[in-house]
Image 1 (cartoon, rainbow, N blue to C red):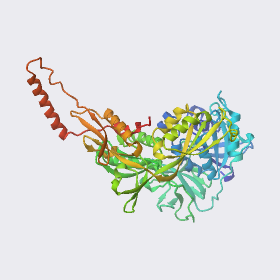
Image 2 (cartoon, rainbow, N blue to C red):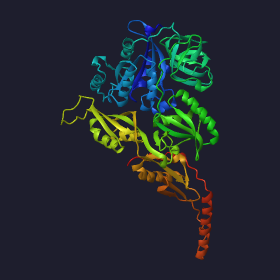
Image 3 (cartoon, one colour):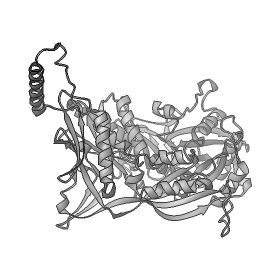
Image 4 (cartoon, one colour):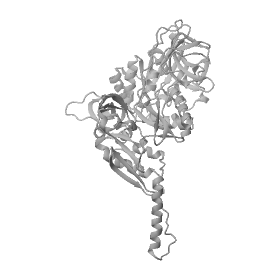
Length: 612
């Protein structure tokens, strides 16, 4: 196919605005998938995606379309995630496209993640095609949402497409808009090969399979290619496209999207964002690639059986190939043995990784409480980056500490401004600004209307929004508010390390870094949670929270007791005392040698430390 009749585009939107459903309708209308093969959420091939109703991985598919002008076109579509934790997946998809379908729900309107994706697409100089979806709903506000798009994008009402992906209304107009508005790719098939790797996965038979967008040159089976960043070379076993299943073709030319089966067995040999070129005729310069993912949340990951350590390492290697935002380094814990310190983009990303390890690799694993990355200035002038509470130096060696702050954007109907401000202020948030999206700024002294939607902007410590902030936001706004955040800066932090002692033994995996002002309340709450989650033993088990050498909270897990007086039906009281004293002496001996097994629920107890 000549480049003038190729269109590369993606679908971007807030979560649950209908991206995957729209993709299903496009596949049906272009005949890419036979109607008997059509499933709901066809592009969401992972079980987790279908169960949770969200897109986790970006998917590519090629469609053949005959436009109204009678010409045949090749449409390469990339379906992207909508959750804020998977923004990195969206950024990689945008780099492989010339245009994007900006999808907005007709009843919910523009949401926080919609704005974030819009600005990201503008940074990549993509042509945006605005679409209002779900116009068949009784609660649809099509005219108002079109006005919002006009204010945000500056596009007229005649340029906004109105569709219902559920029943197929307006799908033909979407396909025509892709052909007419999105520009064709630029690139010369005769130039030296330059292909951008935007994703990859591991296949047991084909080795590492790289998803590529060819910008210049032509890629064929049997070519000897080189990775320009790493310098590694390999032979191409197979090239192909997604329809939506993998289908081998003769070649991939400039402007096309497809896959390359390399046969590489070492997973680290392919790097997402690298440029592929021919080894005997290399290109002069690499493509821009991607900015490396910046993990926001860190947690320890340990196998329940220490002998599974190598299996866990291999599983993380394979996951990292498919999920470039997952970072991990080896670490060891006195309580849990050898494991890994993993970096995630957010708590949902962490949950997805945990479930994929359990389902796809049959691993039984333990996660420690999540934390963020702190910058520590020691008294000797050395600067440390600490994301593991166990690695925090002694307080006497700390000159100053800084914690990450994020720029938080919340979109909400105006009637929920009060509850949101109360929530964010309780999380040490600092107000930055407020903007009304509908009808512009309100007049001085005038009250906002019920329908007006407000964009609230705050600066908030990242650690304060990690665990339950999103749930609290949804519950206080009846599910209407949405949020997006990005790392802003590091600021001085008044935090302390809180150790947890179980049976007078410090458990480094339960240690947390916490705000000094909330330390005592949180310590009391944590030991109460641990008392409920750690099973009772044959002896009393004290559970203590400590800052430095000072115990700030304590609970005791009472021992399971046998009724040694059950057979005593009276008689001298000294007989009963003798039995009780004998039992007490035995309990003391057990306590001296007792070893307490801590379940996974205890490590997650810190997640319930929500603000009352």
